[in-house]
Image (tube, rainbow, N blue to C red; front, side, top):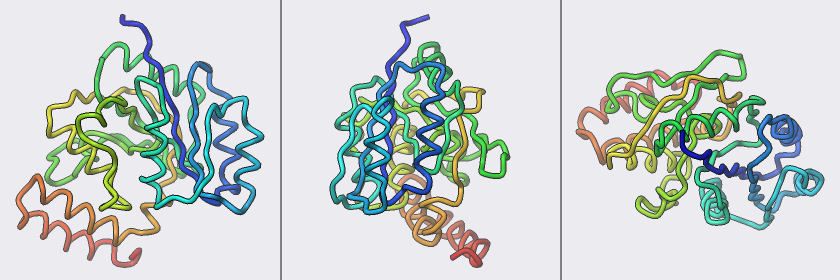
Length: 241
């Protein structure tokens, strides 16, 4: 097996004092502590910065300044990162104690560009890639979620660019689809990486997310089919919009 790759954790925060302590504790519990953790804070005013400063045993780099949203913050984190791979973790997410160790083993054995693991929802349901047609299921056909659930090779951004500011809720889907359509090597690792909050940022902006996913999918698949899927999803999710 090849040498184990290095991993950077990247977290974007804004007024996340309610949730961040749980994430910090889950990072402290990692069996493999050889990683860097970069936190990009958007000038929080609720005590988030005090929590970050109090976690310097695991947070290796941070900045607190105004930004233009979560993907602008993640782009800054990627540019500061030094790991071979990076893993996005939201303030309201939690890592399994073996997450870093398992991701390193999966990356070393597969040499993949994207490694997707299983995750728990906040209700402890196990989330796996759906499989099936990408034109129908989108990136969920081959990954679980970007946050917690997908380890990404950092140098992919040199070829595919950074997260687009044109899609404030779904820029990760565009980037991951570019990698897949460009022939990137993607694998599923059969371990649970942690818990992902399905009621987080994307859920709060459900209508925006669905419309952005339509705009992204139609760049790769027939527009007429994607429009029908958008209408169906808007009707299906109308109570959450």
